[in-house]
Length: 128
Image (cartoon, rainbow, N blue to C red; front, side, top):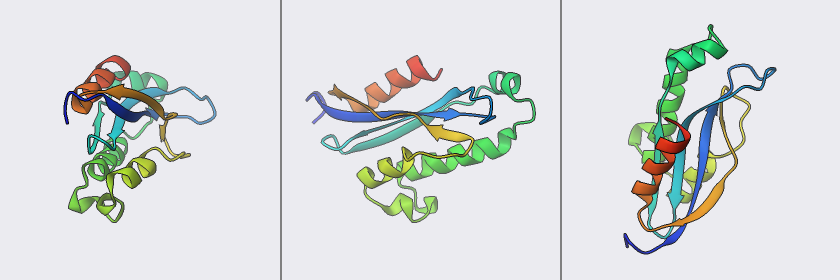
């Protein structure tokens, strides 16, 4: 199926170190294309930028949280019960509103022929 332009959905994962201040930094992107049978995610934590916003942020806990999200996206056996769900349900879980430090942004849609390449493009442009 690569090459056929099919619908996809994606959302950014954002770190909001202080809910009161509302500042945020994009740290990841998750992309799902049902027709391409693809669910993937990428993350990057910029320690310096986060330290500027919130010097007391526990970066190890943040990385552990993001690693858990990646395990769910991959469907890893150690990702828990949610990781065993089908990709569409996992995408729904990964993009559900949250009041934690890591919050998904709104879900956006588009068309692509290669969801892996589209994920990498979005990651480069919106996270790195």
